[in-house]
Length: 141
Image (cartoon, rainbow, N blue to C red):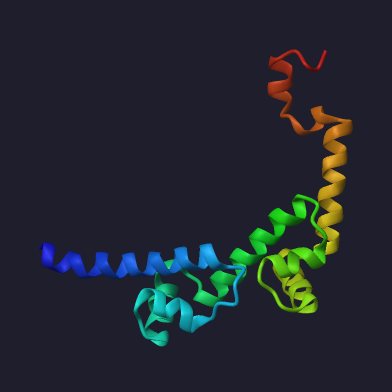
């Protein structure tokens, strides 16, 4: 019974190792060859296994990690062009169009939206606290 599980566990560990490689090096110019080499698989076998486990191709996962990191940096008030290069994109145009396709708004609009939310939090913080908690603590009086 252990003989059947060992290869699956070994394969999963290699896939997780590749995912962690993407998570750690998302800003670097990594490609499919680098990622597949990290897991010791051929490119095509790796893509198939990765997609089976994570429901995304390695490239789709890399892009989603980069976009999530970009959202964090934009929330921290970093300029859009700096964010673009900090998360590993080489072109501001491709970053902006990809961000808009995935998030529904441009990075500039997202940055403005986050700045507006921060301002609203500072001016009226009770609007961002559930009413039941505010009432329980006597903040509504």
